[in-house]
Length: 344
Image (cartoon, rainbow, N blue to C red; front, side, top):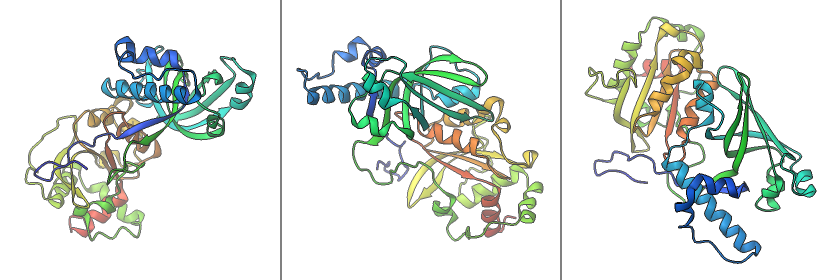
């Protein structure tokens, strides 16, 4: 783990790599370009070992390129309404696969294997496509890409409607780690219980609805002031972020590790379960929050936070090449925190 000399945590270096199960080599070479392709140490010969090494090297080159170029998340583009045919995008989700083994046995069938899943961005959008199973990287792929599997997919958008997005895959893979690193796991979410500044808060019982209703009259400005006091931030009167964030602080620590953190706060003007529609046009407030150098992205709300909001925040935390942590502080967590520190 990398920290600065002051103990402030540097942006989380992404130690991720891809374990490829499907690789369209021609499309992958198009992604990286001729110059980058020329720098790959290709293994000669046609053996299965050489092919596996070449596939791994090509996949690694693609990962480096999409990380450096910050290829956008398909979920984010769907939510913003900006997705269009021809876009190169990535997804990481629970995907349903069909006819993969049958297509593999049939041989060179460009449309034999199929996949689909639904993206919830305040409305359900089906993402679907097909692929040639002859591009599977090994027979092990047949046992992985069967029925439902959580995978990383990089692909080109082939179709866009209000309810449907078509995708032609370049890579279907699992995201793994090159090396073991402390404080790194497959889940980038941090829970309020893990924050050192919230030590002693009793999160074991959920506040009652009447307790939650106390936040109906607790303004967003009061929440901001209280949180900054609890975090021990001396700059509580400064308006740092404009529309980009509500709090910018380096005082959040988790197990002694400090995070530069950006907070988005939502007060009682939206006293109902938070939906993506509550976060600006097409949820772009999360996009702006993520367009910072913060290593921890935090969304706080005076009420419940719905699953699509949590999903969108987690997507931004998984951006290839720049790992983030994220935290959700809903109204129930907020009540317990404010009550413990006698702010409510």
